Image (cartoon, rainbow, N blue to C red; front, top):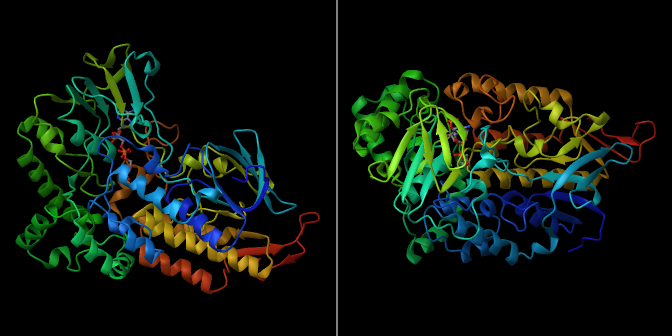
Length: 555
Ligand code: NA7
């Protein structure tokens, strides 16, 4: 395991999708590198989230790694939208196939990282007491890996079982005949509720705000279909590379107002009944920017909800009023709305009667007490920057990242941070990977970062720091793109909103996503590389009084 070693050229933090690919690239190059993972095993998101119903919203065969033809030929995705257990099996298969485990250390929580300016090294402190050094760190720590609990009194008082969906127990949880509460109706709650409604005794859903949601329309993939998919992989990945979201679903080329209302309805009828994100990503572009266009689509989806939910009062409660369709992350669902037609499923509108506290026996709202055997918190994540905030990271001059990003993150391409040299972010804020079919963005970002490292190794540089100007330009560009998007008004993790984290409440929009789409992002990032990384200051050699022996032209 190499645990006695204390120095590496590269330390990768996180053994999820990004960390697995990053270590693969580094080992192929013969670089001395290790992965530090806080969990007992690899898989990241797919290791942790074991709640029933957890699965891809991306078509499985667009989510898998694209780097190995052999892997593509060997792996059979069993379902169009594969489940958590299968996804975890896949990531283990990849790690074993390419012998990556040898470079992974588990149960290693990185507590702190300090940049040593004199030697151009990162000092990485692990919770087990070890301190490692390395030239480069790749923080592959995930976008949604810091779960958050409500700030509710009495959480510890509950005598039954309770857990956040992220920490759903590894052993099966017997839900039969149990009284179960689910708090939260985001993408997670919606997957969970649809899956367990017919498996529990009583299910009570505590909904603060409804979310728009559309059918996943999942199905099995037969041997023949998989053979066909395998023969088309090149085309599939090429098609993903051309769409803004890196999915197979690209926007309708017609203008919303160029077609008649009947034509729009026909298109929506088709998309709603098709698998996946088509209703979101293959829709008219205007739905993301134009209030009237968005309102017409939202009214259409509201009607679809009304046809699926028997009790009109419940149906109205499940229809969002505070935001339009698709301006928050769209959850995809399987029999979610039908769950509310069951006698054992109850909806509590905690927008109207807020949760007051957790009690010994259950939950108290402003109206009454409820008794439960199990309380499930599907309350989301301190998204994107949350995992960074859990590590005490200090860069040039002792500046801490938490302080620098307190109001909002600022980055260069979402990949580098000025003042924090040699720190790479394959899944950071403000890159295209945050808003797209994650692995497609991740593969690009890992390749970009690895090419940057190779560039430095070829030239003997020991420090790369994005310039302040480049970072300011990029951050302003990212923020500007929000101006035209309806999403800027939404209370969702897309805008850095989280009611459970101090400073992340409503009103402080944090620009997390690059909204220009994958093709544009890739073109910009590749152009930076093609022009010899002019936005990055390179230098090399030990420093005397802060001066490097060699400094690049761009420094
Ligand atoms: P989300 O999408 O952030 O959803 C969290 C849900 O929990 C949402 O309905 C919240 O209501 C609700 N919530 C959060 N805090 C509270 C408190 N304190 N009281 C009541 N209700 C609360 O997280 P998910 O895990 O569902 O999805 C995250 C991503 O994972 C998803 O987008 C996929 O990419 C995978 P609110 O809407 O804030 O009123």
